[in-house]
Image (cartoon, rainbow, N blue to C red; front, side, top):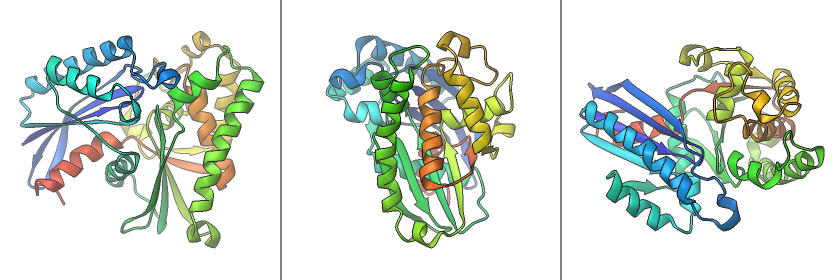
Length: 314
């Protein structure tokens, strides 16, 4: 069976096509496109026409690949921007007519669950407890889990696209803009800390895992990669000191100057500062010094979840 999974995010669209047999699956094709679907969203909670057009174009390209590989089934999931959009119905109906593609909008909690499914088959954790941070374009998901199950999960309104457009109006950003955004981030993270309960209070060993574009981009920048490499990035350990060094380098440059930095994904030069600040504030408030990077996430979780429901995966 060939199955396609599509993650329609606030900043990036991701496609994964797999071949499933004997209760296992193997990737046969993947693609990602930055469409910035959530551009300008925070102003009136509407998906803009240019953003919808860019997304439609990307989904049309995805659909051509899906036909080329003769997929038996397609599962398309939309997250934060579509979830909160006042014109959600118009967008979904348009994609159904134009592509055509049936898109399911999921909650932040379901997004966290599916992301965790993808992570579990990507990186290993030596400790009993592990905490996942998924920094997205429209929201940030948090998961606390042990070796067996998810213990708690949260979806916070901390998205790199939304926060960048609200706070970072100068290029490079002014100190006052960074300070205002930091206060907003800290308020949400303190809520997570208070909700972690007994795990935090007992100070048990924890493996901290990060996924999505901010984390994989930081890993690529740390490694100074000319080309993205799954083998080198997945499982890479980012150290807090190195993240701070990269952050200081980023905030001192204009967007155009950042484009020349090795490892920085095209289309992320404006939002990377916000993503790194979210990560650094999390490391400070929750007191951890390193994070394991996972290349897998929601896209892989979509595939695994569907295969499990079909009885084709454990």
